[in-house]
Length: 288
Image 1 (cartoon, one colour):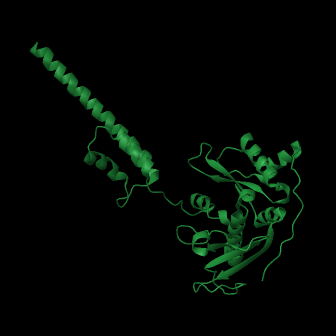
Image 2 (spheres, helix red, strand yellow):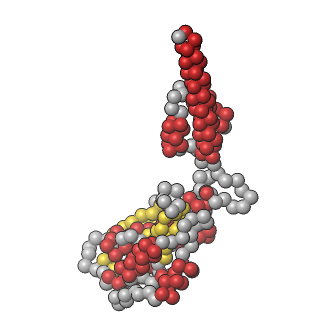
């Protein structure tokens, strides 16, 4: 079964009035709690991408997503996303798309046109044919790689629970369209592909009443501890860390306590060195 996609006219140029710009800021942009609001530069970037891709944010064809990012100066990072309909529209406007077809398979790798099993498909593939081309474009998306799950393997998006074949099919379709039309789709991600990224917020912001998952001390934490341990031997440093470790593991939320303890140890050592120096100076004065 092949779906023939009709072409559309060239997308109109998008220009925003002051009122529309205000609507985007107030209603289309959601900033994670505790993060800085969208900057003028980010709004202008989003506007430029909308114009370049010919997609209308007020029709839900394109939207900015802000996700937490500890490495970003503002504590969050903007991504510009579209739904699969946005990709379909971009592809149709080129006039090159001849047909598009999606299939699914289980662990047996037997492809079928429709997925009727109760369990999720193992993979989906999308086959695209372009006008004037004899070679189809094929893209495969696997459940193992794309299903948004937390560290315990629990699916974190309700759409992937209710419509597993549809969501995996969207990912395969997006990958195929991106391969077929790289210039037209560059810089845009389809929402279904980005649900994995949303797990970051799920892990960092658990449901009320549930404990916050703890992060193990990372390389940056270890470097800070090393820098604060100047003058101490490895055994002395480990002795300071030991009271704050749990089952031999140091967690990120205890690193500030370790650094404070190392600071105090350093002050004590400096004080002892000063006392010793004063004692030596006194001895020298007596001998003199």
